[in-house]
Image (cartoon, rainbow, N blue to C red; front, side, top):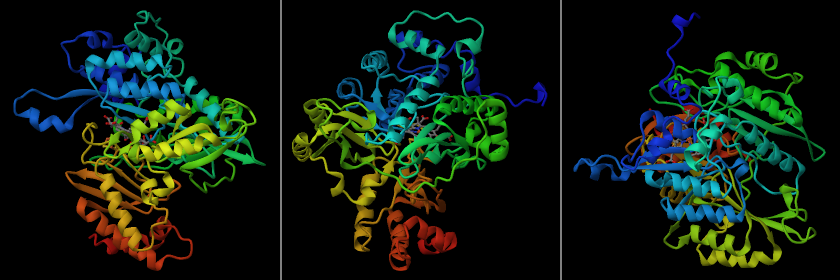
Length: 584
Ligand code: SRM
Ligand code: SF4
């Protein structure tokens, strides 16, 4: 195609290219106390720094009348490869939540933490406070490799240990370089940077215009897909022989987001590209990233994801291009390694005597057995509300027992490195602060997730996080009445079709359509192996549970032995599902 016929680049491409490696005029606009929000160009750029400009949507109506404009505020997202934090870091972040944000920490579906409600005047102090804990935010958002996921469980297992180490290395390797220097200038009073003209030297992987869009990477295990690897742009699935990792199946081209007004956008599962050895992981990650950089769509941001390169080319052409132009290792077929499970890592579990996944003694005697405790955090929101004082309780436990903290990709938290002697004390503190032990929660609650949506997300069409608890209560009651209370059924909800809680992979997906209406998806898989199917659009909120109850009743009476809910729904098919819920 000649240049004259080349599609017009999206405006964000201009913002990136003119930004001087993500600097833009951020230092000037951040310093200007007369501004309560940023210009459009800096609003795009600040995402690369780990922050989004938002508004308090709850305040919109009240502020419209007196014409005082939007209540601007910022969300800040950390970059935490594998979701790991020291106790000191956790406590410092908890302080930041109280001092600068809305008093909550929001655990995310990518093993990270978000702060909401930070005012522009406090942005720089908040960023400085985060960095002073040796946690960064650069590349948590923006058109670069995002937070890299890895199973966080510190189990005495060489595969998890290797994956966690590789996860850290990939995160470092794919971090912006010149962009990092701009980050220092903007937030940490670093020297103003002077860059030469050669983008390939300044930003060797990304160049001057970075990637066409976000890029997401995860490590996972066939028997424990707790990072939902098939939803990722790039996935490394460990191949295990005789209990040891022998390499990885490389997956590419997964993603969830879709847009109602763009029928050529849809969720897709990642496809197997090939088998690589552990020492090829970094080169393969760089190769897939560069393939996306060069072949991703830079004109239409709705289709600017790696999944559409995979879909439009097909896996054979994708493989040919990757092995020919972006990877010098041997071309080897993926190994046979089906995904067979997903562990939420809830409850007390032994880390062994050597400190589990870290490979280091967890402190104290190397012969003392250590434990981790996985806790379910409702929709990832660490807060104090009524008798459930999750934030204060976690703070008190971390202060007293100093466990390492890990965040899961299912919006939950793990306290690691505790001794047998600590356990009774921790359990009693859970009781004191009203924090439920996961085994006392219903299956549907433990296996549910919801995205933040209103009031912080500007893209939300409906509520999600705030309505999910009520919905889960109703589902619990229906499932108990049908004798299905102990059945594993995953339910995920989002306030729009972007799919931040990965709702298209769960057995029940509830996706905001507008007002109080949702699109109902049924038939995925609790282990993230299959996409579900749209069964009815625009279902009023109050009809969701009654409709689902009809499918649950059919499942209770017609399932075959050991058949899961998702498998049952797939077997009976879309027409029958529609008939059951009364969809036309
Ligand atoms: Fe997301 C945009 C929240 C994981 C797909 N996501 C957003 C924004 C930043 C809204 C915006 O662009 O202004 C949301 C901020 C809401 C708020 O108030 O906090 C937001 N996404 C989240 C989080 C916090 C949801 C959660 O419940 O935890 C997750 C943060 C992850 C992190 O720590 O990095 C989050 N987002 C995801 C995932 C799941 C994943 O990565 O495994 C997806 C689906 C996978 C994928 O990327 O396809 C996801 N988010 C999107 C999309 C759709 C992208 C697309 O290709 O269509 C958007 C919209 C966009 O980028 O324009 C989006
Ligand atoms: Fe916002 Fe939509 Fe993501 Fe929910 S799914 S956080 S509403 S972008």
